[in-house]
Length: 214
Ligand code: ADP
Ligand code: AMP
Image (cartoon, rainbow, N blue to C red):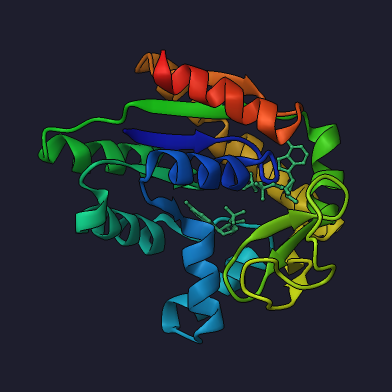
Protein backbone atom coordinates (compact mmCIF):
# COMPACT_ATOMS: atom_id res chain seq x y z
CA UNK A 1 0.00 0.00 0.00
CA UNK A 2 1.78 3.14 -1.23
CA UNK A 3 -0.08 6.37 -0.55
CA UNK A 4 0.57 10.06 -1.19
CA UNK A 5 -1.36 12.52 0.99
CA UNK A 6 -2.26 15.77 -0.76
CA UNK A 7 -3.91 18.89 0.59
CA UNK A 8 -3.25 22.44 1.74
CA UNK A 9 -1.05 23.07 4.78
CA UNK A 10 -3.23 22.33 7.79
CA UNK A 11 -5.78 20.25 5.86
CA UNK A 12 -5.17 17.28 8.14
CA UNK A 13 -2.69 15.23 6.07
CA UNK A 14 -0.47 14.42 9.05
CA UNK A 15 -3.42 13.62 11.32
CA UNK A 16 -4.82 11.15 8.79
CA UNK A 17 -1.41 9.76 7.79
CA UNK A 18 -0.71 8.82 11.43
CA UNK A 19 -4.09 7.07 11.70
CA UNK A 20 -3.54 5.16 8.43
CA UNK A 21 0.00 4.19 9.50
CA UNK A 22 -1.27 2.83 12.78
CA UNK A 23 -4.17 0.88 11.26
CA UNK A 24 -2.27 -0.64 8.34
CA UNK A 25 1.16 -0.87 10.02
CA UNK A 26 3.11 1.01 7.34
CA UNK A 27 5.59 3.86 7.97
CA UNK A 28 4.42 7.48 7.95
CA UNK A 29 7.04 9.54 6.15
CA UNK A 30 6.68 13.29 6.64
CA UNK A 31 9.26 15.54 5.01
CA UNK A 32 8.21 18.36 7.35
CA UNK A 33 8.97 16.11 10.35
CA UNK A 34 12.33 15.11 8.82
CA UNK A 35 13.28 18.78 8.30
CA UNK A 36 12.15 19.73 11.83
CA UNK A 37 14.21 16.87 13.32
CA UNK A 38 17.23 18.16 11.37
CA UNK A 39 16.63 21.70 12.62
CA UNK A 40 16.39 20.42 16.20
CA UNK A 41 19.65 18.46 15.80
CA UNK A 42 21.43 21.46 14.23
CA UNK A 43 22.45 19.59 11.04
CA UNK A 44 23.60 21.36 7.87
CA UNK A 45 20.38 20.24 6.14
CA UNK A 46 18.36 21.64 9.04
CA UNK A 47 20.12 25.01 8.82
CA UNK A 48 19.45 25.27 5.08
CA UNK A 49 15.83 24.04 5.32
CA UNK A 50 15.00 26.48 8.14
CA UNK A 51 15.80 29.50 5.95
CA UNK A 52 13.00 28.48 3.59
CA UNK A 53 10.53 27.09 6.12
CA UNK A 54 10.58 30.26 8.24
CA UNK A 55 9.52 32.26 5.18
CA UNK A 56 6.71 29.85 4.27
CA UNK A 57 8.62 28.78 1.16
CA UNK A 58 9.33 25.27 -0.07
CA UNK A 59 12.73 23.77 0.60
CA UNK A 60 14.41 23.36 -2.82
CA UNK A 61 13.85 20.07 -4.64
CA UNK A 62 17.63 19.37 -4.61
CA UNK A 63 17.54 19.15 -0.82
CA UNK A 64 14.32 17.17 -0.67
CA UNK A 65 14.09 14.52 -3.39
CA UNK A 66 17.14 12.34 -2.62
CA UNK A 67 16.29 12.41 1.06
CA UNK A 68 12.91 10.82 0.39
CA UNK A 69 14.08 8.39 -2.30
CA UNK A 70 16.79 7.11 0.13
CA UNK A 71 14.22 6.74 2.88
CA UNK A 72 11.96 4.67 0.61
CA UNK A 73 14.75 2.16 0.02
CA UNK A 74 14.83 1.20 3.71
CA UNK A 75 13.52 -2.21 4.74
CA UNK A 76 10.46 -0.95 6.59
CA UNK A 77 9.10 0.49 3.31
CA UNK A 78 8.91 -2.90 1.60
CA UNK A 79 5.21 -3.38 2.31
CA UNK A 80 4.31 0.24 1.58
CA UNK A 81 4.27 3.69 3.17
CA UNK A 82 2.34 6.93 3.48
CA UNK A 83 4.02 10.04 2.15
CA UNK A 84 2.88 13.19 3.96
CA UNK A 85 4.06 16.52 2.53
CA UNK A 86 5.92 14.93 -0.38
CA UNK A 87 5.72 15.40 -3.31
CA UNK A 88 4.95 19.11 -3.18
CA UNK A 89 6.03 20.05 -6.71
CA UNK A 90 5.65 18.44 -10.13
CA UNK A 91 9.43 17.79 -10.41
CA UNK A 92 9.28 16.00 -7.02
CA UNK A 93 6.38 13.85 -8.24
CA UNK A 94 8.23 13.02 -11.46
CA UNK A 95 11.40 12.11 -9.54
CA UNK A 96 9.36 9.89 -7.24
CA UNK A 97 7.66 8.13 -10.16
CA UNK A 98 11.01 7.63 -11.90
CA UNK A 99 12.50 6.08 -8.73
CA UNK A 100 9.48 3.80 -8.35
CA UNK A 101 9.55 2.80 -12.03
CA UNK A 102 13.20 1.72 -11.66
CA UNK A 103 12.01 -0.79 -9.09
CA UNK A 104 9.01 -1.84 -11.18
CA UNK A 105 6.64 -0.15 -8.71
CA UNK A 106 4.03 2.59 -8.81
CA UNK A 107 2.01 4.70 -6.39
CA UNK A 108 -1.35 3.15 -5.44
CA UNK A 109 -3.36 6.12 -4.11
CA UNK A 110 -3.10 9.91 -3.99
CA UNK A 111 -5.58 11.11 -1.38
CA UNK A 112 -6.50 14.78 -1.47
CA UNK A 113 -7.79 16.05 1.90
CA UNK A 114 -9.89 18.94 0.67
CA UNK A 115 -10.30 21.95 3.00
CA UNK A 116 -11.12 25.47 1.76
CA UNK A 117 -8.66 28.27 2.48
CA UNK A 118 -11.07 30.01 4.85
CA UNK A 119 -10.87 27.07 7.30
CA UNK A 120 -7.11 26.81 7.15
CA UNK A 121 -6.07 29.80 9.27
CA UNK A 122 -8.05 28.60 12.31
CA UNK A 123 -6.74 25.05 11.85
CA UNK A 124 -3.16 26.34 11.82
CA UNK A 125 -3.39 28.93 14.58
CA UNK A 126 -4.92 26.25 16.85
CA UNK A 127 -2.38 23.55 15.96
CA UNK A 128 0.05 22.61 18.73
CA UNK A 129 3.08 20.50 17.91
CA UNK A 130 5.15 18.44 20.32
CA UNK A 131 8.81 19.47 20.43
CA UNK A 132 9.74 15.91 21.45
CA UNK A 133 7.92 13.35 19.29
CA UNK A 134 6.17 15.51 16.68
CA UNK A 135 2.64 14.56 17.78
CA UNK A 136 0.04 17.11 16.69
CA UNK A 137 -2.92 18.52 18.60
CA UNK A 138 -5.49 21.26 18.13
CA UNK A 139 -6.58 23.49 21.00
CA UNK A 140 -10.27 23.09 20.07
CA UNK A 141 -10.66 20.01 17.82
CA UNK A 142 -8.07 17.68 19.36
CA UNK A 143 -6.67 19.08 22.63
CA UNK A 144 -4.00 17.27 24.66
CA UNK A 145 -5.52 15.77 27.81
CA UNK A 146 -2.42 17.07 29.60
CA UNK A 147 -2.87 20.73 28.63
CA UNK A 148 0.38 22.24 27.36
CA UNK A 149 2.33 18.98 27.35
CA UNK A 150 2.25 15.99 25.00
CA UNK A 151 0.10 13.01 25.99
CA UNK A 152 2.60 10.67 24.32
CA UNK A 153 6.00 11.83 25.55
CA UNK A 154 5.39 14.61 28.09
CA UNK A 155 7.38 17.27 26.18
CA UNK A 156 6.14 20.83 25.74
CA UNK A 157 3.64 21.70 22.99
CA UNK A 158 4.31 24.78 20.86
CA UNK A 159 2.73 26.88 18.12
CA UNK A 160 5.06 26.30 15.14
CA UNK A 161 6.69 29.53 13.88
CA UNK A 162 5.39 28.79 10.39
CA UNK A 163 1.81 28.42 11.72
CA UNK A 164 1.56 32.13 12.53
CA UNK A 165 -1.10 33.78 10.30
CA UNK A 166 1.29 35.87 8.20
CA UNK A 167 3.38 32.81 7.28
CA UNK A 168 0.28 30.68 6.72
CA UNK A 169 -0.93 33.13 4.05
CA UNK A 170 2.37 32.71 2.23
CA UNK A 171 2.26 28.92 2.58
CA UNK A 172 -1.26 28.85 1.13
CA UNK A 173 -0.16 30.93 -1.87
CA UNK A 174 2.80 28.58 -2.39
CA UNK A 175 0.45 25.60 -2.09
CA UNK A 176 -1.88 26.90 -4.81
CA UNK A 177 1.00 27.80 -7.07
CA UNK A 178 3.30 24.79 -6.72
CA UNK A 179 1.47 21.90 -5.05
CA UNK A 180 -2.14 22.05 -6.24
CA UNK A 181 -1.06 21.11 -9.82
CA UNK A 182 -0.37 17.64 -8.38
CA UNK A 183 -4.13 17.10 -8.25
CA UNK A 184 -4.20 17.11 -12.05
CA UNK A 185 -0.99 15.10 -12.17
CA UNK A 186 -2.47 12.23 -10.13
CA UNK A 187 -5.90 12.57 -11.77
CA UNK A 188 -4.03 11.87 -15.01
CA UNK A 189 -2.72 8.64 -13.45
CA UNK A 190 -6.28 7.73 -12.33
CA UNK A 191 -5.21 7.32 -8.70
CA UNK A 192 -6.58 10.58 -7.22
CA UNK A 193 -9.24 10.24 -4.51
CA UNK A 194 -10.72 13.29 -2.81
CA UNK A 195 -12.12 13.33 0.73
CA UNK A 196 -13.98 16.17 2.43
CA UNK A 197 -11.46 17.33 5.05
CA UNK A 198 -13.90 19.69 6.79
CA UNK A 199 -15.57 16.73 8.53
CA UNK A 200 -14.68 15.51 11.99
CA UNK A 201 -11.27 13.75 11.84
CA UNK A 202 -12.81 10.30 12.50
CA UNK A 203 -15.25 10.79 9.62
CA UNK A 204 -12.39 11.82 7.33
CA UNK A 205 -10.58 8.64 8.39
CA UNK A 206 -13.67 6.51 7.71
CA UNK A 207 -13.88 7.99 4.19
CA UNK A 208 -10.21 7.17 3.61
CA UNK A 209 -10.44 3.57 4.83
CA UNK A 210 -13.46 3.06 2.56
CA UNK A 211 -11.32 4.17 -0.38
CA UNK A 212 -8.35 1.99 0.62
CA UNK A 213 -10.51 -1.09 1.15
CA UNK A 214 -12.82 -0.69 -1.88
P1 ADP B 1 -1.28 18.99 7.78
O1 ADP B 1 -0.45 17.77 8.09
O2 ADP B 1 -2.11 18.82 6.54
O3 ADP B 1 -0.50 20.26 7.77
P2 ADP B 1 -2.46 18.50 10.43
O4 ADP B 1 -2.82 17.04 10.35
O5 ADP B 1 -1.28 18.86 11.27
O6 ADP B 1 -2.35 19.14 8.96
O7 ADP B 1 -3.76 19.28 10.96
C1 ADP B 1 -3.74 20.70 11.15
C2 ADP B 1 -4.47 21.05 12.43
O8 ADP B 1 -5.85 20.78 12.28
C3 ADP B 1 -4.00 20.23 13.64
O9 ADP B 1 -4.05 21.07 14.79
C4 ADP B 1 -5.02 19.09 13.73
O10 ADP B 1 -5.17 18.63 15.08
C5 ADP B 1 -6.29 19.77 13.22
N1 ADP B 1 -7.14 18.87 12.46
C6 ADP B 1 -6.77 17.86 11.63
N2 ADP B 1 -7.86 17.26 11.07
C7 ADP B 1 -8.94 17.93 11.53
C8 ADP B 1 -10.37 17.82 11.33
N3 ADP B 1 -10.87 16.89 10.50
N4 ADP B 1 -11.15 18.68 11.98
C9 ADP B 1 -10.65 19.64 12.80
N5 ADP B 1 -9.32 19.80 13.04
C10 ADP B 1 -8.49 18.97 12.42
P1 AMP C 1 4.76 20.42 6.76
O1 AMP C 1 5.20 19.87 8.08
O2 AMP C 1 4.43 19.34 5.75
O3 AMP C 1 3.68 21.47 6.89
O4 AMP C 1 6.04 21.16 6.15
C1 AMP C 1 6.61 22.29 6.78
C2 AMP C 1 7.55 23.01 5.82
O5 AMP C 1 8.65 22.13 5.43
C3 AMP C 1 6.94 23.44 4.49
O6 AMP C 1 6.26 24.69 4.59
C4 AMP C 1 8.18 23.53 3.61
O7 AMP C 1 8.94 24.70 3.87
C5 AMP C 1 9.01 22.35 4.09
N1 AMP C 1 8.71 21.13 3.32
C6 AMP C 1 8.12 19.99 3.78
N2 AMP C 1 8.00 19.09 2.80
C7 AMP C 1 8.52 19.65 1.68
C8 AMP C 1 8.67 19.24 0.32
N3 AMP C 1 8.25 18.03 -0.10
N4 AMP C 1 9.26 20.10 -0.55
C9 AMP C 1 9.68 21.30 -0.14
N5 AMP C 1 9.57 21.77 1.10
C10 AMP C 1 8.98 20.96 2.01
